[in-house]
Length: 267
Length: 358
Image 1 (tube, each protein chain N blue to C red):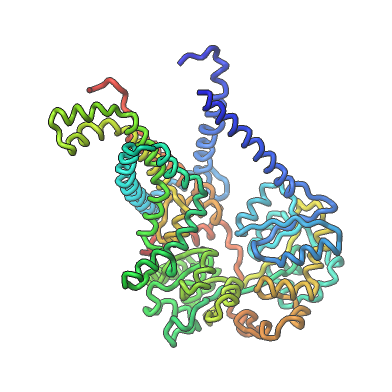
Image 2: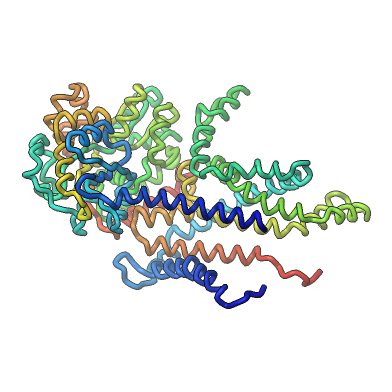
């Protein structure tokens, strides 16, 4: 890409400096302040010596589960969508709910999963005792997966849609079974879509916080919950920032792990 | 490409309109002045009809805004850029605000109705002589429960009843570090303002044994769950309990004998106020016996206004669950401002408790 003049860069540089570099710099700066505003590394020591490490691991574990289920639901859905007649209309219908405010959707689930909600009404119809589905691991993962599905479907759908169908016919003509076709042709060609889907699911899943209270009743603690508590209740901005620094580090690790490989390498 | 440009344009125009509307709305909280009064209060904490009445009587137009935690309110006032005239923080936050020099001294000569307040609620340690704050409502932390759904021997006379195996998966806790850790400390007979590391550790260990009984730790969402009989036992604030009991007559409320938290919400005038005169008028208005009684009917918390007690239903005033007598108040403690370091410790233990739950 070539710009006509260097001044065209200015807005981008300004944007990046103001909205990317400055906030990260501020977080780094705050993470090195203690409660009295003095320069120290005590927050980092606390992070490694206390419950925060376990919390990081559980956050990671839940994010992994959420991403896994989102993927195994989204991939076939995206695949079937590309086979339908009005695929863009169907895609639209799946995307529209993601425009509704996250909190509203979460509150709706409190009603749906409640003791007298529709789910338990069905359970009762089959002669089982109604149970409180809310405030369990299951309800937490379920709601999180529901929220992330559209974000996973879009990139996979685009990747599948762009794929040249003649490649599949070619694989079939050469005697590949449907499974082999999928494994050797379809999946490798859509891997980039899957990777960006994982990025937009895994990273936000690490820092989910309202759902942990409303749906999981604070029995699931994520890094997001800890950050919120440090800033709003404990008013320890230093510790909150330190946790945020680790969240950013994990984010970079994920980005690297799922980065797009340069084309034209090993074919 | 063309359609992309059009979409971008549409977004920019929409953003422009929204930010214009937002700035109009923002102006509300920053403008202020002689003829307007900006009141910043907890949600659902005043009878809206009273605001109308005040506007009619004084000609001052009231802008009413709400918050849901002392900390959020404090942050907003600290940052500046606001001009709230009357705010209603809890006692430990008032202590902080006085220390940080955020409040204006209140001129008692402008508050003839102050004599309506029961002396018990005046001149308390967090603000001696009420230089900066005037009582609004008060209450306790206790247990709201459904007696039909729990065994007869459980009456919550003692906090230990929460640990009863019969309450497996039935207990809801309020999402507050001081309330929950304080409850642990109280159940062991310690002060809920404990600064002793060993006592805190012990309380945490005891709380961890509550594991199987805790269903969830949530905030205001407890109210609808209790009303719809979806929850049986909840540790919460007295006023919230009163709300629930108003909607669901099966419920009962108890403050355990070992002690619990006694809290006060008082009216204060922040330094940023642009209508100090109007703020005094408003505070005096809220202290009026009839106004206070009407407000109590609406809000459901306990009112410190003794002149209003005569106007309220005797049943309400004599309900010891919400208006504990002086001798039972002796076991109740007011939160002290523990300082950020110790508050951080309480929070860390609370987080550790949450993480131990399954």
